[in-house]
Structures are given as C-alpha cells and as structure tokens.
Image 1 (cartoon, rainbow, N blue to C red):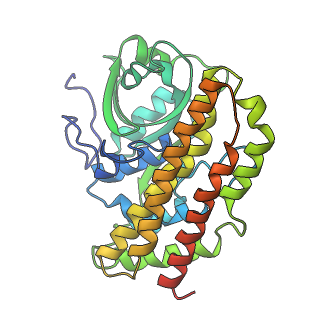
Image 2: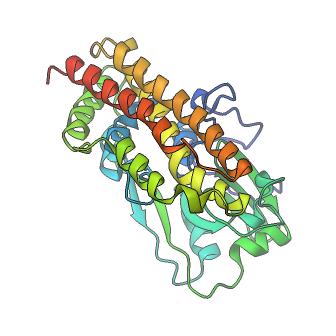
Image 3: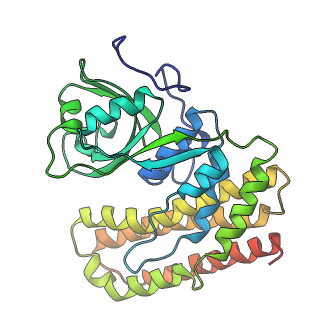
Length: 323
C-alpha cells in the first residue's frame, strides 16, 4: 500500500485482521448479514465490545416473506459507543466524499456491488452482481486502492475493482458515515445500559411467535418453491433460516455476555437461544434436501420444534427480567 493511503484515526495500520470471536469459524453462523457483521468488526477495530449492542435481536419478526434483516438501531449505537450514524451526501461523487470522511477517521458505510469485492472470491467476485454493504476505512485515489471492512474481515482492493466501486452509476448509492460524538460507555456502566436496552426491546418483540408465521407461509408455498432452481434456495435460505438462526445465535452471545457480568440470570435463555440457532441450521439442511428431492413432504411441520424453542427463549428471558 502506498504511503499516500490515509488510515482512519484509532484504527492503526491495516495489517492481518483478526476477526472478533462473534465471527469464529466454529459458530453455527460465522457470518450473519453484511450490516451486522460490518458493525461487529467496526467496533472490534476500535477496541469496543459488540456483544453489548445485540439486545435488539429480540425484535426479529417474520415479515410475510422473510425474517427481519436484523440491524443494530442507530440510537443504541450512539448510547453505548458514542458513535452517530449520519447520511452522507455524495453530490460530488462517492469517491471524493469517502476520501474526505475517511481522512477524518469517519468510516463510510455504503452499498456496493459484490462482484468487485475480492473477499467474495468463489461466490460473487467477478462472477455475479449482488448488493452488499462495506465500511470504507481508507482510500488512495492516485493508486486506486481501497481499505475496507466486509463481513468478518478487513480487506483491500485495487485497479479495476476500485474502478467498479467508484465508477459511474445510474443513481448515486446510499451512504452513511460514522462520527464520534461522545466517549463510549465504560466497562462498569456498559452491562447496565445494555440490560436497560434489552428490556426496552423485549417490550417491542413480536406478539405472535414468528416461527409459526414462517411455518404457515412455507406450508402454503413449499410445493412450488422446492421445484425451482437451486439458486432460489440460496436466496430463500439467506432471508429465512439464516437470518433466524444467526439472529438467535447473536442473542445467545448477548445474554451470555450479560450473564458473565452479573447482569441477571440469563443463562437458561442464552441456552435456549443457542438451541434455536442450531435448530435453524438443521432445518436449513432439511430445506436444501427438499430442493434436491424436489419434494416438500413433511417440511413445514418440522418448524414446530423451532417454534417451541422460540417460546422457551422468551419464557426463560421473562423470568430473568421478572416480567
């Protein structure tokens, strides 16, 4: 990387990146969705604790055709870490504004085409267009090089890939930047505030078990669904079973983190959330087999077990919260 590359304040040199334990390869879902994964590594790179923000996962619902694409609320991020997320106007071109913000130590979050991201080698890189969010940490327009966060890692791209990210577009992309507006909460205060946020999110959780809603929707469509191309399976699974399972594995990590800090009796709820994560992964394999067999016989009723586990998560959680 040339000396001209401007590294953001507080992130140091872009050497080998060690992912946060929430992205450990031994987890059920080493990657969740691009936005949550990005925030995990963004906070990790600043020496902050991403487990503290994950109480919002209680609010995941089935939206009729997909599980909620779970994302940390910006208000929680500001309260816990002193980071404000603001929309970035790109009236002068994304490259120009990204350079200004990155030089000021403000990561730029932007949706890009994954076909230009070398870290997706073997999936979309150079092969298939796909929308995803990256965090731009630094760039060198003269050398056409970019330092960015994506999924569970920190990467660099250059040359034609750089041109693809910043090339002409029909419409300018939606972009945000992350600005430090206050100090992050200290070690002693962080669990207390995280628990307060958990209570607030619990009050806004779905009133009807969303796994049952998913079961009913799948029962109505499964016969037609599983005879479609395997590419349909990948998109469907990402937006249903993966979002469900990854969401509850993150909730399990959040509750375990609180339990370890004496913030409440969350161990039973954490264990139930971890069970739901594993059950969602097992169901995803069953869904894949249904696509290969081109038969949905008995598929939807297998979700009854996951629905019962979902109820157990909230029953155990409510006991811990004295609801």
